[in-house]
Figure (tube, rainbow, N blue to C red):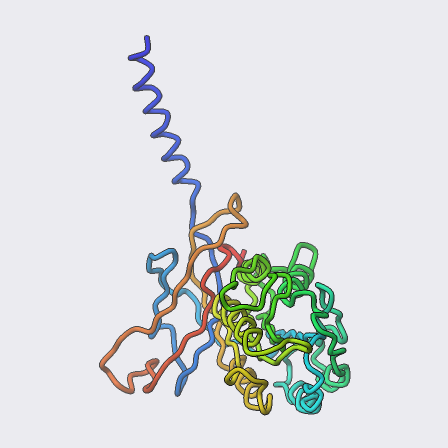
Length: 323
């Protein structure tokens, strides 16, 4: 009797494996890709790998100003010396490309206090900027603040939630020391923070590109805090397709060049579309993505600008975010 059951069990297992394989499907997916190059780059110059497998690009379009949202998040625990940059920040917001929606918020106590919600009235948004409180550790953790805000910005019930194909391209510009006090230490030897990890996953799932400008926090001593915070900012920006702007271990002499680079990053961002393995049954899973430039010897060929090309894209993405 037992010898008859073994073949049946194997047959049942094989059928189940086939059924599971059939359930797995490819779903339309999109990500933001920032291109730093001497000229425009078209889809023929790029390849994308999804979980290590090459997939054809099905869409490649520049982000239009009317389809972009920028959340400017300022840490309430910054040093008071950031006050010298307040007018620079107001000018930056006021001179944002017409059509881009801007939000101004302050990171404090684990959440974001919204001073001005998304608006394309840049003068209105600029006027909402004020000096941070400069109280040491007031953000609690900038990464807690970020996760909380992303959930409200893109979560279930939010306008333009992550599962909608019609949502705008989402960018965050954080101005922070990057230090996570809840990690227990500012030493570079203690760089494992669950709050940084959680914020990365939240941003990747929602399709938010995180950019940051390092600025020291009030009451944070020495280069250890500087190094720790910058390491965290590097981690979260690289994982989500953004850039961490900083110079050395001190505060920037001016925010102007960094703000200009961020504005250019929006202008040179594209929406890339492709298929990724996934299904509605695995709505919370992420897949690895990697963009590369096709190597070519044909200098000046259309779609292949000469000179150095840098791509910034998220390391992981939520499949089916176009459905």
